[in-house]
Amino acid sequence: MSMAVVGMIAGMALGFAGYFGGFGAFLLVAALGAVGYGVGRFLEGEYELGDFFRPRDGRRERR
Image (tube, rainbow, N blue to C red; front, top):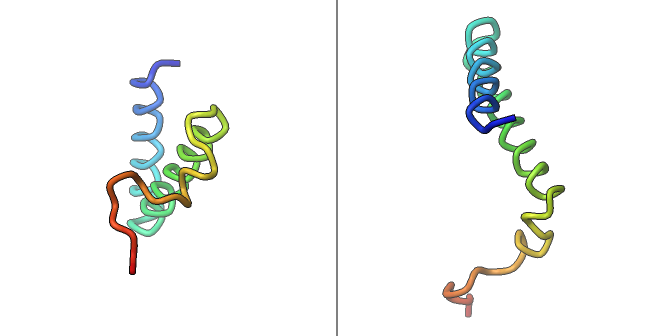
C-alpha cells in the first residue's frame, strides 16, 4: 500500500472523527494515530528502544 493511500485513509478517519465526534474525538484519533505510527516504525526495526532514552549527539549534558 502506498504512502498516499495510507495518508488518505488517515485523513478520512480524522475527518469522520471530527465531523461525528467533535474536536475531542479528532484529537484522540490523531494522537492514537501518531502512537500507532511510532509503534509500527519500532516494530519494523527503524527505531531501537535506546533511541528514546539516549541524548542525541551534539546536545549539551546537564551539569
